[in-house]
Image (tube, helix red, strand yellow):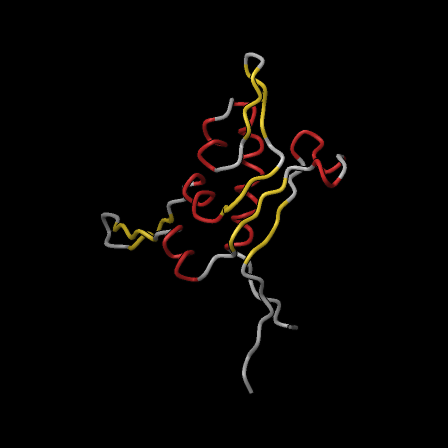
Length: 126
């Protein structure tokens, strides 16, 4: 028998940022992202081993939220801001990280969501 796990290669995330989920569906911020592979997870969360004075190995994992978001996000819809009377759209991760600091809440929410996906365990009842 072959072990099968149902998985999608892409996903869409609708953040709660600034009441986004209360907006009409057509106006909501939507973030399309790839589902990570094991190789992607290893690349995003490199393990480092250090040895203390007694020779005990200590493992640490470095987490870079920008790298995680850049690796997985493919599209951002219905997002932007107005600066000095000019509407500035946010469609890419670079534009999101270049946006005003008020968008850090959105970045943190997106990072949390993607981190959960990367570290998800398969439902063994599947």
